[in-house]
Length: 151
Length: 130
Picture (cartoon, one colour):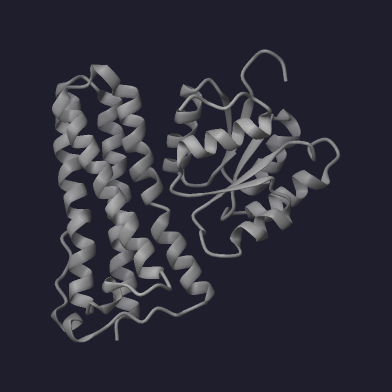
């Protein structure tokens, strides 16, 4: 994942999503779509690696799954009609909220990929690369959403 | 349906979602056939007569709603159950899928045990082990 530019001017802006529009529906869809492979591959890797995987690898996979779940929770919350602390944040704080799990997932993917290679789990290593790609796509779409809707 | 495991047609345009879900279903013994857009989904459904279709809705060429309508309009395929699978999780989406002819509806991210239970119900199989 490429390092993202900091946007200090976001601190004075808030997210205004176009309520009830097709654009909002598409955005929500675009943001939920990459989370499906993130969570699904995590579960698949654990299923396939099973008992052959070292304990610390499985612990890391659970951590990665929890990070993906955090990304899903943030995605759902930002589009929810219910009162949300997330919606009170300015765009700089929002950006940070979204970047934290994405960066954690990216770091975990790299570490777990090395562990998978060392443990002779090449398919798991390949799937971890895919999780990294999906995480990058999610964060890129988040950054685009902030660029387009922070005022 | 004979003694062999049911054949599932997975219509999904996202490569990662297609790979991940097809492998998870294959691990559970299902024979999985793949299509990457709605038009290919309809064509494969007619050719292969699968036991069940898992249909993404936001598809290129022909979207999943229209593909389902065509499957349900054709005498040879109208009996095949279709489960809609979509990242569109807003109110009204399930109703829209049902109106297109989908027999059930599931959102992404996929909760596999729930999807497997829906598949088993439509395929008249015993519920999957937890």
